[in-house]
Structures are given as C-alpha cells and as structure tokens.
Image 1 (cartoon, helix red, strand yellow):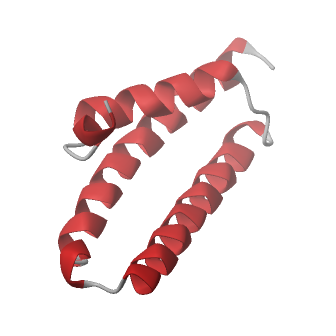
Image 2 (spheres, one colour):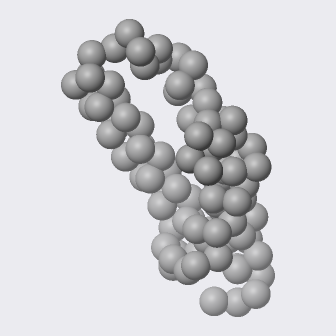
Image 3 (cartoon, one colour):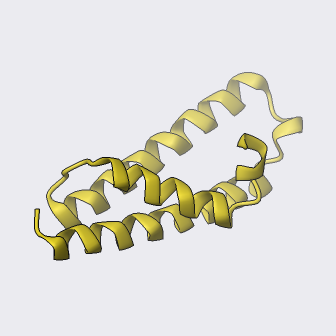
Length: 91
C-alpha cells in the first residue's frame, strides 16, 4: 500500500469516526432508551452497529480495497472519542 493510499485511508477513518460520534448521539436522542422494551432495544442496538460496521467497511473497501491495519482502528476511535458525548460513557 502506497503512502498516498495510507493517508487517504487515515483521513477516511477519521471522517468515519466523526460520523460514528454524530450517528451515536443522534441514535441515542431519537430512541428514548429508558422507555423501550429490553428486547426491542437490543434488536435496535444490534441493527445500528451492523449498519455502522457495513458502512465503515464499504468506505474502507472504496479507499484501499479493504485492507485493515492497526492505524485504521486507532484513527477512527480517536476521532470518535474527541467528538462524541456518548464516548465519554465508555472511557
């Protein structure tokens, strides 16, 4: 993988981390979790994360033909932690 492709991959994953933060905050605001049934909430959560994973791997496939390296997860999670208010629950 060339240096240019690595740079594009890093930028794409930083963007996906930003998208994760916005999507998770929006998801938590749209669906009032305390008033939902546990089964419905679990199904919604699983579907949400499956869709997020599919979007991420599709973007990764477009940018660098689906090669997964450590810095991809690092850049995505770093941007997610900086942007998302929900990420503060995980830290």
